[in-house]
Structures are given as structure tokens and as C-alpha cells.
Amino acid sequence: MADFTIREVEGMRQVRIEIDKETIRARRGALSTMRGDISLTPRLPSFGDVFRSMFTSEARIRPYYKGSGSIVLQPSLSGYHILDVQPDETWILEPGVYWASEGDVSLGMRRERFWPSLWSGDGGLVWKTTLCNAGRVAINAPGPVETVEVTDSELRVQGRLVLGRTDGLRFYSRNSSPFPRNLISGQKRLRVYSGTGKALVCWTPYWNEHLYRRMTGESIDGALLE
Image (cartoon, rainbow, N blue to C red; front, side):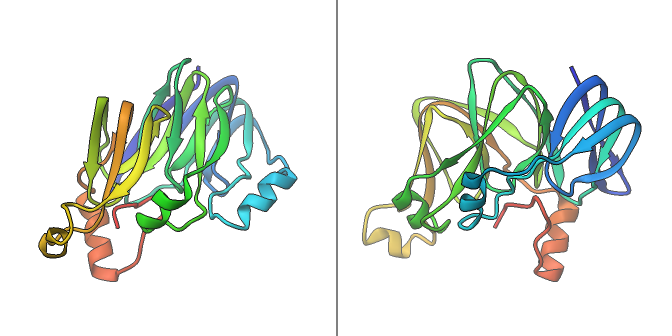
């Protein structure tokens, strides 16, 4: 199994991956440095991938790294989280969250339902990365991540706090309170996840990433708290 670690230097964080005759995948453009006998192979996207890219910014070209050695990915003021996908799980990640994974993890795409996506402000055609098969995955995270288990219940959040969920949780959007009280509640529409499953939630951003956004008004790759 590939060894994924997160290191922090000068307030920035980056993922380091050690492989021994193994294969991993990473987001296009994620590489910083690599040492050892490692080959990088970007595979051409299918026609369906090209078609979906017309409606989403989610990258479908994710190069393979094969061999033995050390791979260090690009640093960020935001952070990363290591997720262990279990054999019986399917995860759905928010756009821009995927960063790297072991070669045995199967990556796919799933289109979110039209009306919930539209009402939540994401747009009508939203494609999200899916993960299945056992393996380790690194994801972008604007702050520390907590795994929240939901059992025949609802998780309601304000904003894009949920970075990913298992397929047992159904996503939709609703008002914070019944009309017309929602007009004076001071809250925007809530993002709701109902059913039974797990959710990756980032409650609080790292202070340096949050300060950068407040000072410049610019978003940092991987920062989803908008």
C-alpha cells in the first residue's frame, strides 16, 4: 500500500507519497517533485469525458505515476485530508476536492440531480467525482476534516462545508425556516444530506488560508468555504 503523509512547512501543506512498485493517480498539474524510478503517464480521456468537460470544471485527465520512489505534490495554504475508502463504500466528492489516490481506487463521475443543484447555487449541470474499491485517497480541504456519521437522519449545513459523502446520503436544498420566516432569519438556503452514511465535514478553515481570502478576495485552489 502506498504511504500518504501530509507535511507542513512555513504555514503551507503538501502531500507526500511513497510507492514501492505501485501505481497512484493524481490531479492534473498536481506534481511538485518526484524521486526514484517513477514514470508519469497521462491517459487520454474518452469521448464521454470530453463531453462532460463542457459542463463542468472537474478534471478528467488524472495522470498515473508508476514505479518506486517518492512523489511530492504541490503545496497549498489550505490543507489536505487522507481518506481510506473501504471495499463496500462509494464516495461522492464535491468538485475540486479530489487530489490523489492509489491505483486500485476506481474513479468515476456522477451528475448531481438538477433541481437540488440549481437551488443550492451550484448550477443545473454538476458532475462530481466518485470513488469506489478499497484504497487511500488524498483530498483538498480548507481546514481540518471530521467524518460525521448520519443514521436515518439529516445533516444540515450553511455553505459548502461538506467535502464528500457516501452514496447512502441524498443531497438537496431547503430554506432555513418556513416561508415567510426564512426572509427574516438571516440564513441562506441550507444544504441538506439525508439518509444513512458518512460525510466529510470541514467546520473551520485554516487561519492563514482564511486570512488570505479576506485580504485579497481571491480563492485558493482547494478552498471551498464560500
